[in-house]
Length: 106
Image (cartoon, rainbow, N blue to C red; front, side, top):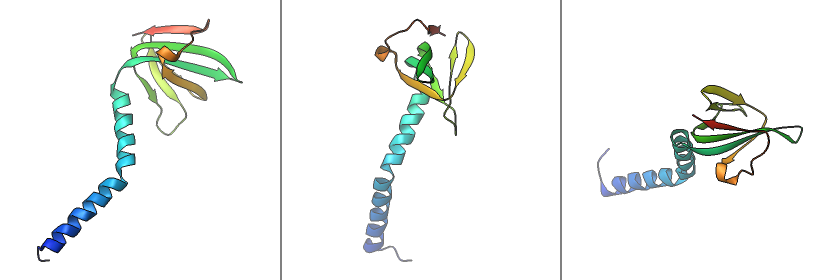
């Protein structure tokens, strides 16, 4: 194949199209990666039958999704906690705080 301006132009257009069509997936991957490595303060609320069973208040910790599952895991007081089912994870500043709250300062 001869290197011509036309071939160079087609190659550049192909790369631009590939980049533009994959931006959403790339952005989601970068968001997931950055959420896995950034610590923060989180409220993890566990529900059963529509009732709040327990709330974990995590300070400067990580909350991660289980791969291929609806589960979540994090450390609380040095112990690994795994939850699955009806779980809400949000910034701690959104939390109302409940009588069932457990403070996790790792």
